[in-house]
Length: 382
Image (cartoon, rainbow, N blue to C red; front, side, top):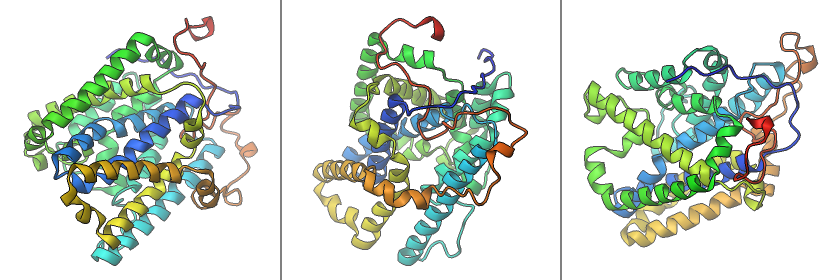
């Protein structure tokens, strides 16, 4: 893999959210909520096919976007405050809440496992680690190659679930690739021929997942798609395990690029909702867990087969959209995104980082992309 040029550090302050990035977040968040809602139904072929297709690329997609929007991270005072207020604080709230619910209904975990995320908190923990290591990936000569090797080798050894380290290392290549994405790549993905090929690819793989979900699950359990189990836990030797993960890395990257190609560029209602995916991600787990533990919903609907799967998908989409509405954001913004100005020094006192660095890392703020993607590149982008 060829050497990547150093990333430039912009000193201009962003002025607007980018519709493309928020649209991307909206659509991938729908996949996240639908995927989680189908977890208890994968015993059925109809659910397993959809689940396999979603999990083949939806988190790599999310991680790559997170890497792209973190490329300006330099660790200045303002960015550190953002890490605490929008990663550490929500992580503690979500993990505490979810563990209290499971302890109430299941009696587990017996003790509060603050450093061992049980479910949704893993992504916040991963973003925390990836963010802090961003300068390393920008300094290395061959960052993507290094990240791929780490991902492949991590499945060989026992890694404790401290801050979701197995998944952090398994999905690391997508974050590093995102760091080295640029606007020109997004422009190229928007060309008409590529978008047609992407639609055919995503549609074709969806059909294949429906047709062969059972046979694939017999040979490669869906646990592979969670990026956290050791190879021997998946009944694979070292060579087979690394080869399988390498294939999954390639498949996930190709499908992610295809999905990025199809994301709408124009501003629309999905742009507005996509700017609030943060709250949807943090809250939807409580909805799913409550419906499962309190009402036994998935056990009740399982006998209805494909009808239950379709109904589950529709309801999941509705719930996701509701959780991305303005009233939800208004209520939970002070909880999940406290300003904490009282806790940190004034950014103007930061003598170690001169200039303004865009705070784009997971909120969709960046220099605006052009609304059309089929036009020739301007000289400024070449």
